[in-house]
Image (cartoon, rainbow, N blue to C red; front, side, top):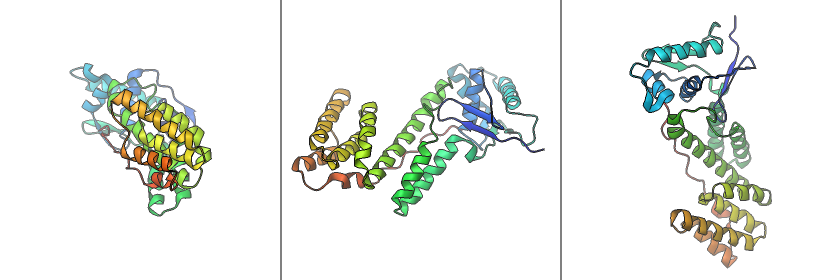
Length: 272
């Protein structure tokens, strides 16, 4: 008897589907533990780490029995009586054995890696397509309905940063593909949402100036300078200042400024 396909999602509200059927996890602690396992898919997670994700600072002195009960309940919800059990027991902990392509985070990482390989080969079209596939895995705020303070403190910021770096790179690639006018509206929205992310303002100014909107590009510079001064007490970085100088001089098109490959996102601390 073949086990049904089990699919999971972390990049938005926690999601599970067994054979195409959605599975609901009403218990907040079950969601906490399942999320901690999925963040370490195919790697054993010790009982202590699971307890920390579930209870945080309020972890009971002897959490093993409660963790065992939670595993039993989650297994039952995921079809624990079927062959090929999804959650397997390891010495001192548990692991969730889900293929990378059945977890949205795994697909995000797969397509991001494909994009990096395309970048090495200089194929902008393939890189842009792979970056879009990576970003398409996101359904909203990661772990949106997982109430674990530990995971939101130690994991969610890393996931947000990864998404933002991939988004910035996708915009950079599209600028290099000459799609300046198409990007302006999106970049205005992103700069308003992330007013302290200088790379987004560089991209916005580049798109505006390349589209013949020199005055708007300079106005964007003054806007980000004000945000940085008011929020952080600092001046714009060298890239923004240099781009502003080029626009003022109306010299060479500044699109080459956004042609540099940004630093790859840090992996940060992974659960487990």
